[in-house]
Image (cartoon, rainbow, N blue to C red; front, side, top):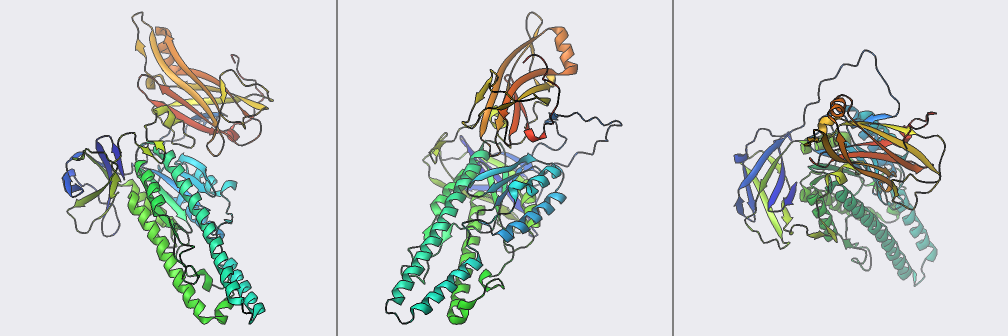
Length: 569
């Protein structure tokens, strides 16, 4: 993975031995970095390995369960790479989706403790199934939930559909018999069918690239390395010319430029892509028992053409997978039925890496592509890294958008993002009984779908005072300033409602001593539409240190209570 930060280029390098195992304990002097053939001087060097899971903490003698209380406190490691499973239903046949889901459940059941994973889905759009978590039960629920049920993609043509279409064409040919116009009519029909197939693939490509671009922009706000495991039944980013048609190139389309733009977004977001072919080890579906093969009996040469077409298409798709992986510093997996093992290896590889940085000697930020080569003095080692970058100026525009750093609170408040724990706090969410028609004063609706009737929630927070900055004023009081924000999201990550406050606190010595024991108490009021699935994300930002903490709660986890909200609303 490579990222340009002003005059510095930050480069992530995965090193494996001949057996595919991570190579550890290399030193900065073991690496040679070449940019456009010129040797670069490393400015920094760091090795990253998965942190060991913390020892289990004995349960208290008397467990206490408090309804509607949540915290961002965690005993799992908070550093290292993040991992994203992208379940591509848009390009995956139904039967492969079912097998894929079983394999992912198998992986989650055995994944190492502390592995942080988010689950996204791709259909005609990108959507979040589960934000980053290391909780196996939550991940299993996301993989088994209603939103992740296998569905047939309307844009994927099954072998049975293709077989039926060919049989229909053969019957039409029989009906036309010796009609002098038969050849022209059949040729036009074949060309039309090829055009329709190309239109379907074109839509899949457009939806796919749009979804990956959106995911890259989302991940760009999260610092550090991210491993994107893209599980798909096909990678239709290149359409080969069809020699059977009158115009072989009419249905052909190449998307190399769009793919390179998407790869550039992923590189800038520090995302390494690990494409996994969800079909596993497979043969031409047109030769399976589910397909009649009647057209092959009528035309023996048709089978040879079909096998050749299948071989070329499969090679093209695997080539696309290799290209995406190579462009972003990842690795492609295909021709294997062990999808869980492929995910395990991708996450293991992407969690063991070296980060190097250097200052380019060429300071002309002209947007040109610069090749980068990394070498180590070990003949059996394999290196995975980004092999170049576009020398864009700081704050340059990428696909019409400026690449600007996000404020720490913006990152903390991203729907489904990791829960930052620089400020550890607990919240109690108290639902009000009944509904109301007016929003509380602090609420700022963000979407036209934010409509009455509303259900009201009181958010009571308690933060550790040690995580907040309080300074002693000349009069002996302790003063601090921090921001508190509650954002209501729909499942797709669209903000529905916001309540934000900037607090300047002044505590007497006695209040400060009491807060050392009880924490700092905060409160907000926010409403959600009565019907629908929503998520509430609460964040605290210390203005002096820029430390942040956040926790996300699905409103479905809030238990109803007959108790009225505490006074003070």
